[in-house]
Amino acid sequence: MLEVVRIPVLNDNYVWLLHEGASGETVAVDPALADPVLEAAAARGWTISQIWNTHWHGDHVGGNAAIKAATGCLITGPAAEAGKIGTLDRGVQEGDSVRIGSHEAAVLEVPAHTAGHIAYHLAPDHLLFVGDTLFAMGCGRLFEGTPAQMFANMQRFAALPDDTIVFCAHEYTETNGRFALMVEPDNAALRERMAEVHAARGRGEPTVPTTIGLERATNIFMRSRDVAELAERRAAKDAA
Image (cartoon, rainbow, N blue to C red; front, top):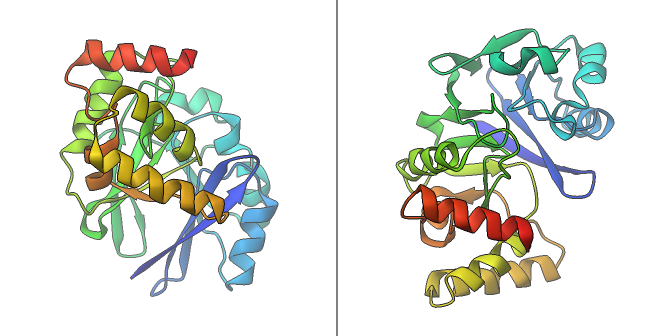
């Protein structure tokens, strides 16, 4: 079995620790900082053996160098962004895979937030690490890509099983949900989810991970009917 631990860092980032007991391997996904991640691993008696990066932004790779210095871990990330991730040991692309113990993750190319953004999909385990492509009730800003690319990403994710657990990298749920309610005010599933989100945040609790099933019902970007509708919604969200 795989164990996943959430580590809150910075203002709203989440770093994920993925641990496989049989092999003792531990992966840090998108470590923004080193110290909290190393401390969380050490508190559990784990040693980080790998880092998986989804894209080059500093709040996803900022801890790479110090974690590698402390552990000697192997750092994997998007081959298309190797020039922007100086600590990268292995560049991967669509069709490649990575492993933690006996568990394999397929590399998915999901450009739009950045040009080389990737995700890691452990299909047999129903786990998906998406970086800043998909958020709870949201999607990433289109810094280096197009609405067409993001629409394709949303459609690709929507085709996955409902029980796929989605590990995104930010606590944006409440803000995303407020905007989504403006777009789909009659969406009963969305209203129900937002009541739960407000309650959780009021208790200081996180709202991620999420699931593909939840996103299919409540994520206005995944629910966009075409590229034009996604583009309109993304532009409106950026301006909100």
